[in-house]
Length: 349
Ligand code: FES
Ligand SMILES: [Fe+2]
Image 1: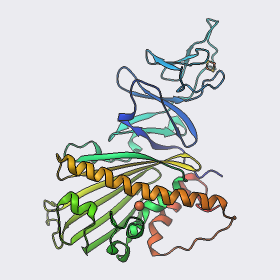
Image 2: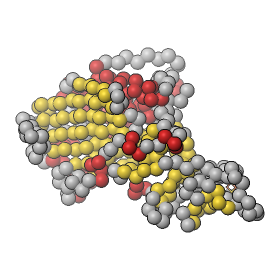
Image 3: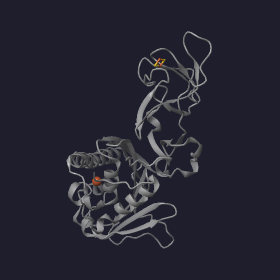
Image 4: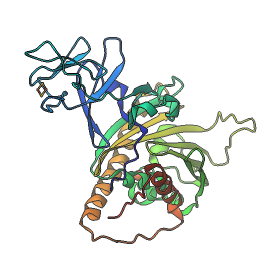
């Protein structure tokens, strides 16, 4: 039974990945081909020719006048997926078309709707406005994960693992020691997990980027919009420095960490990550440091989750996990995802 949640928007790519060439990416098991039209809009079609299923993204398939010409026998498709020309005859069969997918470009991401195209409402796309806001500087990346998406959801909903898996980068003892609070907005299907540390060691990730050299007040406020978008609002300040009563926070350092969790197949995931900051905006050294450190942290997670995926695939059915307080957010996420999928989503076999 698939654990995919269909009829949802997913991040397919960064806008910067898609240009005037043919770009292939599999999402929820569906092979797609993307390109940018001459007018600058992103189009997405099923990546299989209706004739003999040659991938439309595969050379020598090519783009001409915003249409894809299949590289095998030349069936030609417009951006709606309609076949407008076939070789050797003037009449194009009425059924000659491939599915076109609704696409929206927003907050530096290309979002694609997987499911019934008639239900695609752009207003449902959750926002990550920092990524395209000039008041922030953003570094970002995309790592292939050879593990099911539920393992990445689990990983991100509980940050106490920072202390162990990411010690020396973003983890300090206080992260694992400090209890979390979890809230679920049942109507909107959003999960919030917060951990506020009043007096914590400053990990190198933040010491080097902010210049703070003493202990810090460190807040981590997670906001997960299942299935795809995960936001971590991170606030760092010298110990005791709090936001002003009017809500402004000129002495705090703010980092918005964004993940897009897009299933590729049942056992692999596109792990998009971005780190937006509201300080040292022009400092390329800080950008390089945050990009390198965050990628290292993401790859530590990827390595651990790749191992877990192999373990799960080898284990007998019915393995029972043991959950504790730190898992409250992850369990809430599984519950909401199950509701959205219309079937229980399970990590174990
Ligand atoms: S497979 Fe595409 S034209 Fe034949
Ligand atoms: Fe992690």
